[in-house]
Image 1 (cartoon, rainbow, N blue to C red):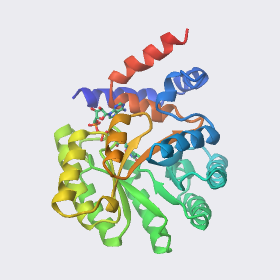
Image 2: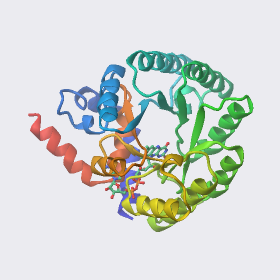
Image 3: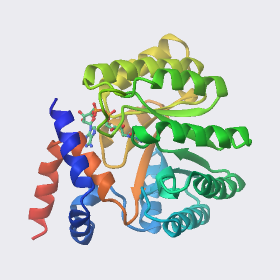
Image 4: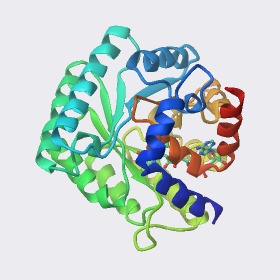
Length: 311
Ligand code: FDA
C-alpha cells in the first residue's frame, strides 16, 4: 500500500519539468551530490570509470544512457547517435560490451518505423563490436509495441538483443513462455511504474509470486535469463530452484542497480554467481532518479541528508 502511494507520488513528480530543471541544476554537482548515489555521472567517461570499478570487484555491468520520451525526431536521432558514440567509447575503453536502452528514447512515441530504424542503426554497430543490447521495458502502454519491435528485430536475424518482462503485469507469464519459445534472452523485473488494476497486480505478494513463477520458467526453459532484483527472498528462491534442478551458475545472472544493495551484489559474486550492475548515466537522470525514490521512501532521508551536508 505504502509502495503504491509512493510510486504514484513520485511518478507525478517525475513528470514535472520545473522540478526537473531545478534538480538537474543541483542534483549532480560535486562528488557528494545526492543523485550520484544512483547515477554514475552525466558523461560516458564517468560511466566508464564506474564500470571499471565494478569490474575490478569481479562484477559485470551494463551501461544505460538515460533518456526517455523524446519530443521530436531530431532528439530521437541525437539519442541514436549518442548511443553509437557510447559504443565507440566503450570499445576504446576496454570495459565489458553491454548496453541498455529505451525505445521511447529512440522515438517510439513519435513514429514506430523511425524508432525501428534507429534501433537497427544501434544494433548494427553493436553487433559489429560484439555488444549485447537490452531493450528496457517502459510502462504498460508500451509493452506490446516494445515486444513487437523486439520480434521484428529477431525475425531480421539480430541475436545480440534481449527484452525485459515485468512480473507486475498479468500478461508476463505468457510473454515469458513466448520468449522461451524464441530462445530470446529475458531480464525479469518486478516493474518500476505505477500501473492500472486492469493490467497489473496491485499487491506486493502477487507481484512477488508472479516474479517467482516467471523466474522458474526462465531458469528451466529460457536463454541465460537475468534475474534483476534486490529482494533477498526472490534471490534465495531463485538460487534454491537452480540448485534443485541442477542449473549451473553460468546459465543465468543476477542483476542489480548501481548504488543499491552493494552488499548483496558482492556477496553473490563471491559465491560464484554472475552479477551484473546496471549503470545509468547522462543528463536526463531525473525520471530514473524519481522512480528509485518511489520504490523506497527511506531514500528520501538519504537525499535530504545529502542536500543538508552540501551546505
Ligand atoms: P522490492 O521493491 O521488493 O525491493 C526489495 C528490497 O530491495 C528493498 O527492501 C530494499 O532493500 C531494496 N531496494 C529496492 N529498491 C530500492 C531502491 N530504489 N533504493 C534502495 N533500496 C532498494 N523496471 C522496469 O519497469 N523496466 C526495466 O527495464 C527495469 N530494468 C531494471 C534493471 C535492473 C538491473 C534492475 C535491478 C531493476 C530494473 N527495473 C526495471 C526496476 C524494477 O522493476 C524494480 O522497480 C526495482 O528493481 C525494485 O524492485 P526489487 O525487485 O528490487 O524489489
